[in-house]
Figure: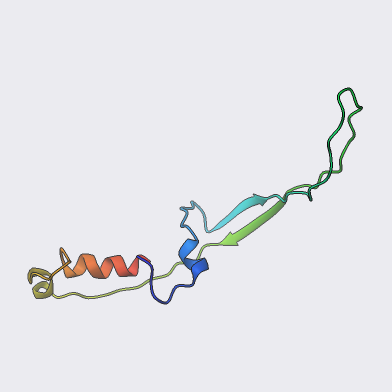
Length: 93
């Protein structure tokens, strides 16, 4: 479920589980395209490669709470199993 207040970028970003508060990843870049075709038997030429870049980020803990009465969960509502499940689904986005 996409929240009406989400931007397209936020909607496309995926979640990933981490096992530490600070996590790291390697970032690589593609070099510009070039005419690098050779005829058969031509000598190979060397290229300059660039190293990857180490990136990091820090996890942020976000907390939300909601309350649903037992009556609201017991009452049959069209399109919902329970009010608690519906409200919970809205907080996970």
